[in-house]
Image (cartoon, rainbow over all chains, first blue to last red; front, side, top):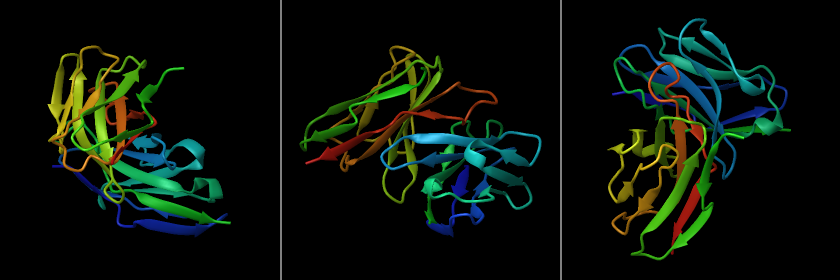
Length: 115
Length: 115
């Protein structure tokens, strides 16, 4: 079975400071990893993904994530947070080889950026 | 523009009534999904379909039914057997199997409230 853990229900950061939203995963075989963002009462929007290759993945709105195989992590980062980044962030994993191609989502982390 | 359309956005239902949520996509995607979102629980998979006229149960299929008669459409019926149907329902699609799997495109969601 595949699973995702987002250990923080909420992350608070001041505008202009760097932000990190944590994600760890468990899967058989090589993972596909994803980050999505959700604004209130809206659907999820894709931010970025790791399939293979460079461990540092760059995505939309200045976000990036680093794949760390030894720590089974895929933390989301941004060098300088904006108030408009405040939203709910979901990490997801799929594994077409050893697990399921259907992504499993974490519980979500609420990011609050203070002015 | 291509995308996924869910309707209605808000729906109220009396106990004991069935209700059908619509999901239409014009992305030419093979796979479609229904997720349920409850506060603090992330996204839970209800049903998914990889191809027309075929669908599979997800983790929480009890009390729900679906059909996939056309590639573009994947309606979800919440039946009276669903004991706690009040939730935010999200429809998604993806290109199916292969490297693009797990990258989902979401609709804007339907919020169902049982009175």
